[in-house]
Image (cartoon, rainbow, N blue to C red; front, side):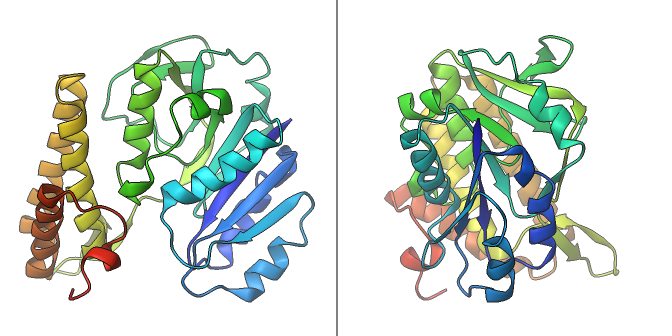
Amino acid sequence: MIAGCVILFNPEMESYDNILSYVKELTELFVIDNSTLVNNEIVEKIIKLPNVTYINNGGNKGIAKALNIGAMKAFESGYQWFLTMDQDSFFLKPSSFFNIIDNAESKVGIYAASYTDDYDRWIKPYNKDFNEIHFVITSGNLINLKAWHKVHGFEEKLFIDEVDHDYCMKLRKNDYRILTTTKLYLQHSVGKQIENYDGKTFDGHSPVRYYYITRNTLYIVKKYFFEDIGFVFNRVRHLSKNLIKIVLFYPQKSEYLKNVGKGAGDFAKGRYGPFEQNNKNI
């Protein structure tokens, strides 16, 4: 028996199709809607699916809070394993992924469905089906709910960005393993397409996301600096690469850099939560 959740945020119809790729593998699916404007057409289709519970969060409460809502409902219902999905992810051969955790180990905190074989992070072989890895994204994960409860869930004040890295670090600090499949099982979209001055496009994020990326990365660096310097270096390198990309390639550089500065400033002031709450004049 496996429960799961998918987090919606102003979804398009393809999100419904993505849900169809895995809903039959689950005993129960919690659909947590963080939308600022609910798409009733999609919601009506989703709630007709078997074993689906729809929860309207009344606006964007952040990915961490939405994940914790779904996980708590599953935990209280007695489930041991809980699938976490983004609305823009779908499974390739889902039954194969769910079948390979039939012999799940209690000290594994996450069984993750790989979406890429190009990992820019620490990874080593574990067995024929899995590699051990330092951290994974939140989409396509079967999380151990006993472990989730022990580490007190996802950090809600981060709202979005670095939520996954913080959660993985908490698992590892409590001696839980994080395993990712040796085969690709997940199709996942990263960011959005940004058009450069010369008309070329690349994967990137909105200016507001760089507020969160900056603020939360600095939080992660401070929190884990004396516990895992390799992990801290990885996050600093990731933030630095993003800043270089903004300077070299992004249009509207001033808006992006203003949000980077605001994120750094709010980190220094200890301000967290949603961007709108702390930055009403932006």
